Image (cartoon, rainbow, N blue to C red; front, top):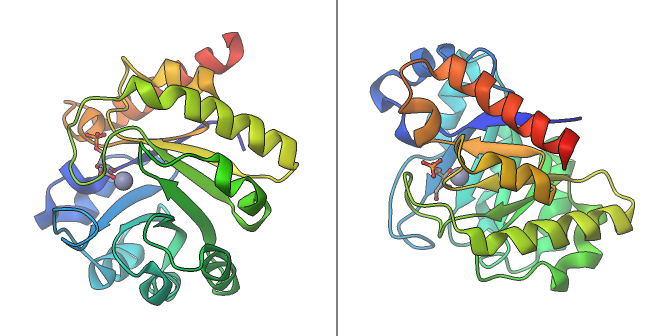
Length: 222
Ligand code: DX5
Ligand code: ZN
């Protein structure tokens, strides 16, 4: 599939989400951060907002669920219109069953790992997944500093994906910017979430293009 850029709307203007999506026509996905104030200490948006934006925006929705009990809630996000649904493995009671339910609803199934969660225990699950998200900050807030300590895990995840033979995308989220995206791409990431870097830029569309170019160049040389 190659490099994909999925801007996070967490730092966009929540009063005008469809207009914000229209500012980034070159984005592959719209990354929507769902937080429930239980799994993370912040509260954002949920299914009704995703359902509304899925109808109003041309890009597909990449729903990142930072919520407790994703086993109960995640599959319904497919019906709300999300094309990709990411649950946190730390919160999931039965990740295999959950990934199968998400796929059965017609969405891509993705599993996220917080910075302190290792990938190795989940190597055998990779064929059940369409994407793995390696968080590069502690989830909960936009605008945090990128954690370089996550780079070895990105590398290991890429190796395990290659060994599995499954077609699994590898996403990074948190502190991704023009300054950090090359390191992520060189480590093996191919799907890049960027919130403050895109919506803090004067020209978000140009920033999406610049991020894509940097990641592609780093892949070519890495
Ligand atoms: C953080 C969210 C991110 C956040 C990224 O918990 O999952 O998607 O919006 O924002 P930046 O790119 O500013 O770190
Ligand atoms: Zn996110």
